[in-house]
Each structure stands twice: as structure tokens, then as C-alpha cells.
Length: 480
Ligand SMILES: Cc1cc2nc3c(=O)[nH]c(=O)nc-3n(C[C@H](O)[C@H](O)[C@H](O)COP(=O)(O)OP(=O)(O)OC[C@H]3O[C@@H](n4cnc5c(N)ncnc54)[C@H](O)[C@@H]3O)c2cc1C
Image (cartoon, rainbow, N blue to C red; front, side, top):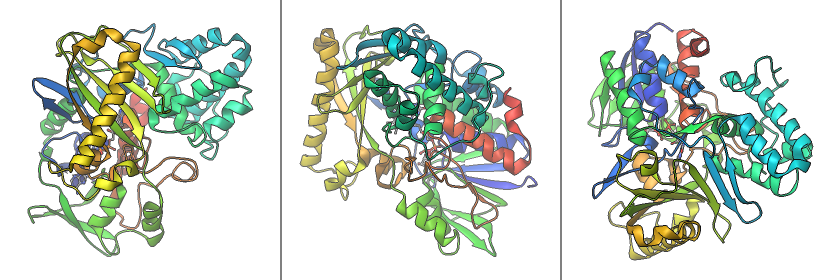
């Protein structure tokens, strides 16, 4: 497609990466963001003097020389993003009843090696599993560098096959199978529903290396915005797209929320597909696509607790996984243990069904009823108690506590219903038949976590895939 004017809807990771790549390719790009703060799920917010992250705790595939750093290098922002020290001997520490405590080092082979040492009787099964994981990463293409050179690709990306099935086929059983399967929870998934290729990309790149960056989401978003502007691109905040004008299968303009019409040659919708369908209105998408988006449930949502500490947590630059007595997988991190320049705090989160906040669905930001606040306080208490169960020394350090819920996610980024990862990627839903980036309108394209793989890495790869197909260039080749 020849370069022209492009409107990008949304300033999350996928929108900004698409915008930079298009601007580099000569497009005149304008990013429209409905919210006052850019970054979508990568935005941060401030309480007191502390900054907290909403949807970025670690970046998979971010090991030195790894795929994510090569993506940043290709976008010409790598030197402005500061990766923070990570305890590579234990990038993840898992503490769950059937396993006890297990430290997982960086590197896929090393990480799975730690499991082999814990469960020597599962070694052969783990080897088979590792082989299938590497073969799948090679077949996926974008992540082939995570596999040892010469690894043959899997014959196909079998989106119908679940992680639980592959574990069983490899002969991995018991607590070892449950622990490997529980890596699906990084993606708000369960091993019984998580498509194996999705697991491989996210858990594989997570095992390879899960670094953090200085200033969290902002540390990624700000350099991307600066790069976009240096290429002549624009970002409009507090001014979303209100409608996409089209006729004869071609979009001709977007109308912003102030009523101004902007002529376009292409539109990239990086927000929830239901929102893009709404903006395009009648005749914008094929009925089959509209029903698919309507019928596919959203992914799980999240309950995040933000905790002020009066001193450094001292739990180290690593990511902590645990499980609540009620069964939810808990993730927590002490950002200032990675970056001593930050004021001490903790972020702790669990995935919960968006429907859990349904009783307060009709309430508005800043005017939520007392019952909702009480529900959140109960969660805050449970998460704080679990963290203190593992680290009793933290109890006297805990100051104020805040939390966000599915309603927060829904209202800040217009994620339908509050899903954390957009449309569900489970087998049976998008897992078995991913959404295509193109539909009825010839110059309207979808990108982002509902369409491609979720996560910082997944959504940036989706942007490369989209812009590669628009410009007719194999952008994958640039990442070697
Ligand atoms: C709690 C939580 C924790 C997470 N932790 C991690 C992690 O540690 N590591 C990781 O890799 N991933 C993590 N993720 C996932 C990751 O944050 C997302 O997959 C990714 O940021 C999504 O980017 P996106 O561009 O697809 O969408 P979004 O970030 O949702 O961006 C879409 C943008 O579109 C805007 N928008 C919506 N409607 C309109 C409109 N009409 N006009 C203009 N703009 C509009 C929204 O405001 C938003 O800014 C987490 C997610 C959550 C929820």
C-alpha cells in the first residue's frame, strides 16, 4: 500500500509501535487517544509521591540481545530505555503448597533445568516438552531466536491443542505438570484452556528473560512518543476517535471526539475490536466478524493492589508467584528492589473474572458505591496477608493501600467489560481461530492484544506483522 495519511486509534504498545513503523515508512501518522494519559495498559499513575504501574510488571524476551531489545533497537529507542538489574539466578520465585519454594533462573533451558533438578523422575518428559516448545517457537517465526540454532519447526501451529494436553502427551505429571501448566497464568489462562502456541510465545519468552525497565510503562511509552514526533507523527490526547467514515469498502476519514473530521488513507485500530466495530458503524465489518467479536468472551480481568512501604522491601530484583488459600494465583513485585531510585512500594495482583465486579457495573469512576469499596478492601486485605505470610518483615512497613479492579480497566482503556487481555484467547475462542487483521473495509486494520498475542512483546510483534504486510516489507528480517 503506498504511504499516505494514517489514523491510529489508541496509544497503547501496539498503537505506538505501529505508528512509529508507519511514520518511518513515510506515512503521515496521527495517533488518537481517548484518555488523558498515553500508553493504554502501560500507563502509570501517582499516589502521594509514588508511581505505580497498571499493566506492565516485566517484559518477556527482554534478555540482553533478546527479541524485545532488538525490537526497541529497530524502533531506534533502545538507547533511551533503561533495563534494570534482574536476579538472573531467580528471576521468578514460586511458592505454592505442592511445590514449596522454587527459584527459576533466566533462560528457557536453565528454567526447565531447575524443574528437572526438582523432579528428576520427570526429566525425560521435560526434555520432550522443551523440544516441542522450541519447535513451536521456530514455527511461529518471530521467536525462533529463542530456540537453539538448527531446531526444526513444528509441522503446524496447533491452536487447538492445550498446554495440559501437551504436558500429558509428554508424560509430565503431578506437581511438576501443575507448575509448568501454571505458567499459563502469566497470561490470565489455565493450562486446560491455554492454546499451546500462545503458551510457548509468552511462557517461552518469559523464561528466556523477564527484565523490568526504569519508570515502568512510561519508560517504554515516552521514548516511543518522542520517536514518533521526531518522524513528524502526532499524538492527540483526550481526543479519541468517535467515528470512521467509509463508503464502498474504503475508509475516507475519522471523526475525532471534538467533531473534527480527519481525511485518511488508512486506519489502524489498536483498541478493543468491539470499539472499532462501533466506530465503523453499519457496513464497516462483515456480519460474521461482528458476531465473532460479540460472541467471544473477554479474557479474565485483574485486581491489583498498590502498597506504600516505609522502607525497601528487600525481597530482591525478582518476580514472586504464590497462591491465595482460595486458589487464585498471586503475582507480586517490589519495584524499588529493582530500581533503588523509586520510593519503596509493592504491586500485587490476581486475575479475576471481570464479572466479579458486575454488581457495580453501572457506577462511574470516582462515584463508586460503598459496597464496591468494601469488596476492594477485602481483596486488598487478602493480597496483603498473603504477601506478609511469605515476608513477615514487611508487615510493619505497610502504609497506604490502593487497588484497581475490572471496572478500572474498563473505564480507563475502554476494554469491553474490563478484560485485561482483550478478547479471550482460550482454545475454543480466539485460540482456535485468531481474528484477522483485515476485514471488510480495505484500508482499516486491527492490531493489539485481541488480535495478536497479548503482552508487551506480543503486541509489539503484532505491530511489526501489520506494518510489514501494509508496506510489503518483511520486517522480521530487520530483527535478526
Ligand atoms: C493487570 C495487567 C498486568 C499486565 N502485566 C503485563 C506484564 O507484566 N508484561 C506484559 O508483557 N504484559 C502485561 N500485561 C498485558 C499488556 O499490558 C497488554 O497486553 C498490552 O499493553 C496491550 O497493548 P495494546 O496496544 O494491545 O492495547 P491497550 O494498551 O489497551 O491500548 C489501547 C488504547 O486504545 C485507547 N482507545 C480505546 N478506544 C479508543 C477510541 N475510541 N479512540 C482513541 N483511543 C481509544 C485506549 O484508551 C488505550 O490507550 C498486563 C495487563 C494487565 C491488565
